[in-house]
Length: 322
Image (cartoon, rainbow, N blue to C red):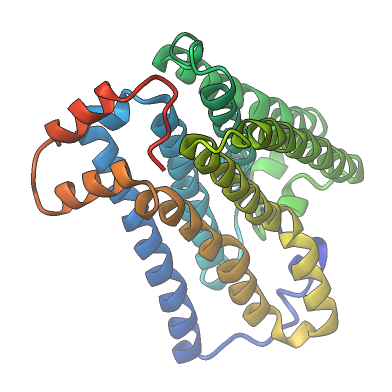
């Protein structure tokens, strides 16, 4: 969720786009972002309308994932527009936007790990699923996710507050993470912490998948569906990792094609930041039968689907309607 120093150093040496080109690039980015945010917003609205969804830990974790996608995509779009219009922004404002984006970005892998563990409990410990995966426990897990993400980025903030002068926070900067948190030690700490956290999340997914795989040998449909779901979580996690390679890919391309700085900025933002945000709605909004029915009812202006709710209540604990 950052550009590297090469990007920021080139902003003054690259010719500005014409008004038409700039409008087209920004229009494409904004329209795509608004479309994805609208889709995700529809899913959140559907979730709030139907008790069969908002009382299910599985869907609560999913909506947390969707909400973080909205936050991240909003910040990415704003930062891209700022880079085209204002070029520089107040350091304090930039710092706030970067921190919010980083928190949302870090929350996603942890949420995917929690969703994989929910599948694992539902299949491997079906009799204890109701006691372990309660709504209250799910919100506690979400709180823990935010705490862990905060512990990853807040030390950077404390270092900046302790080392930078007051004038720095009133200055104008090109809004990228490496220009705000510019200490080399902070960059090394960021790279190491990202690698450690991603390894832990991957190990969690692998552990859940292989345990579900063993359960799937019984040929139960629920186990097979849960196994496929965890595989999809792995695919989603791979897309999350694109955010962590964003700065490296962008700076590498800029080093090769310095005059195409703004084109690279737009293309990488769309491919590595915006488009992956479409995956979450597709995985659950369209694939999950219960959620799909609720979305259809919401779009048609119908109220809560009581038939779906009754069906869900009659389903045995730990069952997966996938």
